[in-house]
Image 1 (cartoon, rainbow, N blue to C red):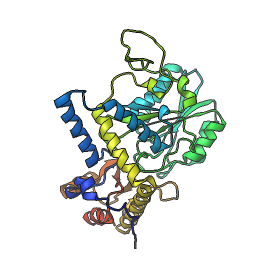
Image 2: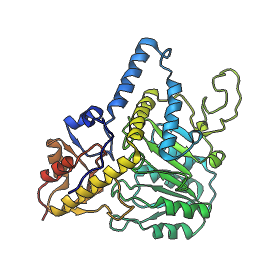
Image 3: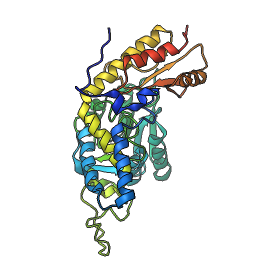
Image 4: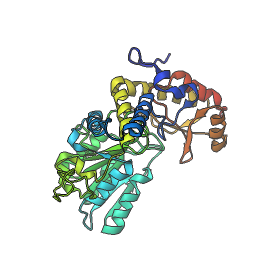
Length: 383
């Protein structure tokens, strides 16, 4: 009988995630519900901004604490973290910031989310760079295929999502990162489908750049995320310039165009304060529960869900090989209209989505085995 690893003593799912009283929500790979703590932080910001403007909130002091929490989540240093409004912005820092040369190569997969495709297409268009996309095979992308593509020419950068959005396939970034570092290839990671769900260690994985918005597995609001740049590479990227990138930015009338020495050089203007406050509250929660507990519960939930789906006749696309699983379960129906299945489930207050002609369920750690049963029991047999 499947059992989930326990949550910390005193942790109340219904209090932290009131959505559980209204929906069986299984789309954390899309836009997740924010935690109750995040909502409280945003509400308190609104009260302070309404009643006292900026005089009592100490918001920028808290933002620096959020920077430390973000760094801790991925085993980075705080001075390697910049705040971004979304994943795309961080990836654009790399695409627009590196000094590209004709003949350079970029390698990615053929099943990336568009935010990790279009920037590299634009680099190829503008700079004479070759963009190679490694194909998916039955929901998986072989690490050997990625390394072979990167070895086939003068590859400058390898751009991957740690977890692919439509299949849930998790790349072996430790092996890929070791390969890249040994060959002076930059490794740029879209971490939005991983941060808050699975372990991310930028040191052990030899990641050079990583970008992730907080509105999926980190359970924060849209519009507030993080960009990691390895300290040794800060000078390799040209930032977008505004008033905040420079040292002594608060000395408004003294123009000193000297960039900040850390990742704050990528922050060109004022912060999304309510977003960062909400993100920080959810990161507090995630780190309090612990990534080991979160990952263990997620993998147990998705493994249980896969077995129940297959028993009912559905074809599971997501790899179940050790190290390749994630919080995403993609599956298909041979017998039923999949759009209608999504609608039918939502009418029963069960939320999954359709991505690339695959049904996609993405629970989080606070979901239960009963939630998995409710989803499968609401689906018609597929034999």
